[in-house]
Length: 293
Image 1 (cartoon, helix red, strand yellow):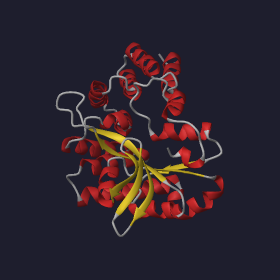
Image 2 (cartoon, rainbow, N blue to C red):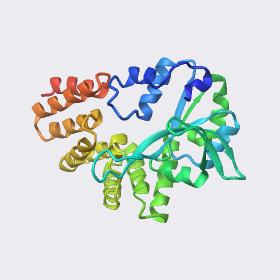
Image 3 (cartoon, helix red, strand yellow):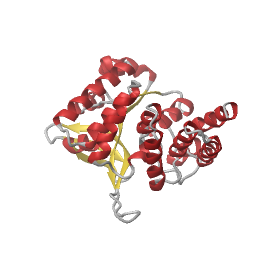
């Protein structure tokens, strides 16, 4: 939907054929979308950042650049007993009205020109560290840089997001998304032990059942903190919810490798590659373990 704004002809199938060869794969993450645009729609530029806010969305929209965000979504029907119905969803924001306090969204599920109240959008957006994706023409890059300001620099942007998440864990200490975002931002800066503490708090407060289908920074933080048993617990739960998650199989493999079970690690890495033959991290892991049995 976003690419069509710039004249691209295709649909979701066109994209998934390149980055997700199996339709059963239920997650396309931001990095994969970025890869597709940069390799298959090279006449366009793409940037994504975290820690967005409503005013930033409005600035881009006013400049003629729609913004795609990842946010919470709720199914109408359960997929298993006691399903909390929560999932992830991309939404393209194309307009706003300050008088009515609403954004206009182009939603692949609910339809075009959907009105979304400012406060509800921010609530749903927070679950994904308020990530925002910008696709624009090369000649629009000076505008993008001007609006982003210091956030043009990825490290500065992440530092800002870290400070936002730190503030929100204080002002809304019972919000698991605030703690999860804190952990994700700390993981970015390789502050892994601090990150695991934040993730522990988020888990204690209660996260959606599908959270680890979409976001994998806890796997990275627990691995680099040497907490293999905790990592295996997380990954086992992720695989219970999403048995075909290539990311979960990958990190199960790395945990088993660190625990000294190279054979199981190799099998897990191979399973990850079977779930997504285009998954470069799985191929790297297979090559690594062959060289370091």
